[in-house]
Image (cartoon, rainbow, N blue to C red):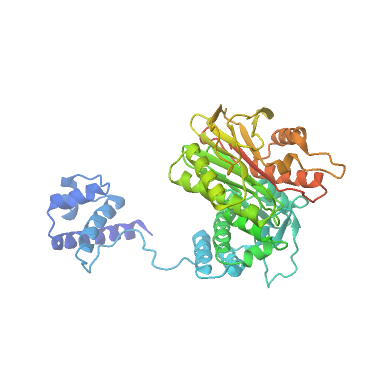
Length: 485
């Protein structure tokens, strides 16, 4: 727009302002107070001079004055409005990042999960990109393509043996042959990867392209999580075989496998993911506190799943009501012993970390002690706060304390990790677990990738077949704002 056109537009706005002001019934002082409340910078005399055409105002100040009048006109539903100098977006965007995000949201409005590939394809088209979605299976071994009628030849890709798998593991956008592999995330939880194919000749290292891909990944990741709650289409891709009823019960209760705030990250896994019976974990993050819990119910049946579910629900119920570790433990005891007959019980650990000071409070109900990893070394087994397993009575209940240092890791696990046996009967053991954690720390792997690799190592020790549930929760604390994941 030329300077003459801009001047003409502003003059038209001033005349409309003066006309509308005369119809509002406001005094000049009342108009100025409304304008000032919106952040207006011109004085009362300057506003009066502007309305009489004696002096100009900057475009932004004129728009603020217009908004002050329009707000008053809207109150009695006055039909005439003062124009703004900026254009009003009356139509749906057709191209660019906003159009792609609108296409995604509109495409999944009242749509089943199976429609997500088509919605993603339309969103990509608005950016000149072709988008294909790969979801990781629940074992986190393979990346599986969502069905696409336009490209039926796509095959699953190995997490540990492919470039897309590397993008998934490292949470980095990686260029391939005329395409980008973009981590598919819901927040910080890894769900898979996007295969993004831009027009031929595009610079695959273009920061603007990478930024747009991250926007798409974030929204598609949210839609994957949301749509999974009301349909089975995406789960059918991620599930390689049917879960047992006990495993399905536990998986429906677990929180996202990974979460983070500015200073704290947590990741957990349960294995075997199709037959897990009594293992479960939980966490809750706030600006000041991180709460952690892990449970291992006796047995490997659906009844074990009921015990773990009852412990998890009792813990959450009290925590959400603002109760601390004592009350959480008491309610878990009463729930398990009162609702599950015949001596059912669960071991477990409850912990609370103050994110400002690093003060950790915890109790241990007959469970393997947590490990403290500092500067790449396992420096301590947290053996305090011992009590009976949940469901067998509180006994002497004590809360143990530990002070963490920035950069420390906290490792919670069930006995299925250390007691996993190979064909000769040798256990995975505490020493092997310590060595593994220290190697992972030296490699710089974040909590979710460390958890995935640990479960893989335990499975390999048992030739791919676990005799017991094996679960792990890894948490890392840093100074506020320093955490990257």
